[in-house]
Amino acid sequence: MTSPAEQLAAPAVLADPHPTLAALRASGPVQRVELRMGLPAWVVTRYEDVLAGFSDPRLSSDPHHAEGALAEAMRGDFLSRSMIGVDPPEHTRLRRLVSRAFTARRVEALRPRVQEITDALLDRITPLGRADLVADFALPLPVTVIGELLGVPETDRERFRLWTDEMLDRPFDVRSDLPRVEAARERMHGYLAELVASKRAAPGDDVLSALVEATDEGERLDEQELLAMTFLLLIAGYVTTVSLVGNGMLALLRAPDQRDRLRADPSLIPGAVEEFLRFDGPVNPGVTRYATADVEIGGVVIPRGEIVLLATAGADRDPDRFPDPDRLDVASTDAGHLAFGHGVHYCLGAPLARLEAQIAFTALLQRLPDLALAVPAEQLRWTGGGVLRGLRELPVTFTPAPPPGGRG
Ligand code: HEM
Image (tube, rainbow, N blue to C red; front, side, top):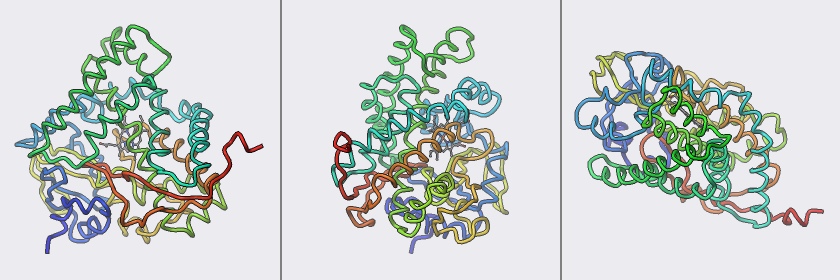
């Protein structure tokens, strides 16, 4: 029999990682595991330890602190020049450059447009009687929103989405898959350089043009940092949100009493979105850090230079923090989950993700009230490479409604 630690690397775990995370959590605070990427890491699964880990300055976000074979693999990633891959003070400087575009107030101003995009996508789906909620809804919604916010031309969005898929879609093994992933990174790098050049030539009223200006005028951002920032915002701006809507809707479809309750009382939606994040959030198993010193957690010493995986997905189902953690409760008022992280790297896009998900769930429940899975849940296929997890597709059926033009 394989141990829970060995199981974490098994592809089958992607379909349902929670029992494995529970077994890891039950067997001790920290275990040495092999990740799906083929990298060794120390995984931390208890809520209190994960929370403390986010605030421990010895746990760096910078892959340059990794040692050995894995260092090479992690450093090649040009994301490591973005805010998510650096520590203060560089982190503070980079994050400040864009933080104003993502405040709760600025994001709230996007509400009418997000509603419009949501309605238009549903107008297309409702007459059909069946749909793939990932491809037809959960994906195009955040891709359109972040594309418009950053100023990515509509005709380019499909291209960057395909390259992202290549980089994130399949579990990649650092022992064999690096050339493929690096080729995808190269293409993405080339595309981003073109995109930045076009903003320089013809600036628009968008976040990317503002960043180009910051680069050119104040030397607050160099060219590589600018590309890394653009890449991070584009990717982080949609990949996770797709899974929040997909995983959350699947959780509802598997708990019809919860779906009925939510449909009957839409005032529960904001709290339900927090519960979807806790119950089956897009970041799974969690976020990576690098030990800059020997670090003791729960009696285990993690050696300097090794990867630490703060398993937020394990923490968010810790029975010592959340009573009855494996049950979805849309009326929960406990928003203490760690699905957006914690501390200085706390998700910059959290207000945007919340807005999109709240609008999406409200509209889906209203307009597709008898939504049902079109295949048995066990047949659903999942994507994820290392730290993210989501549905590849979510086939559903429902009673068709007349096209919007015919409504009256
Ligand atoms: C449900 C959706 C989302 C989830 C679950 C999520 C989750 C996370 C988590 C866990 C982190 C912390 C990473 C760490 O500590 O290493 C993070 C950081 C980040 N997220 Fe999100 N995210 C979501 C949506 C978004 C959106 C819509 C954006 C839009 C731009 C975004 C942009 C970012 C950025 C820029 C960072 C890096 C922040 C920093 O390093 O200071 N995220 N996100």
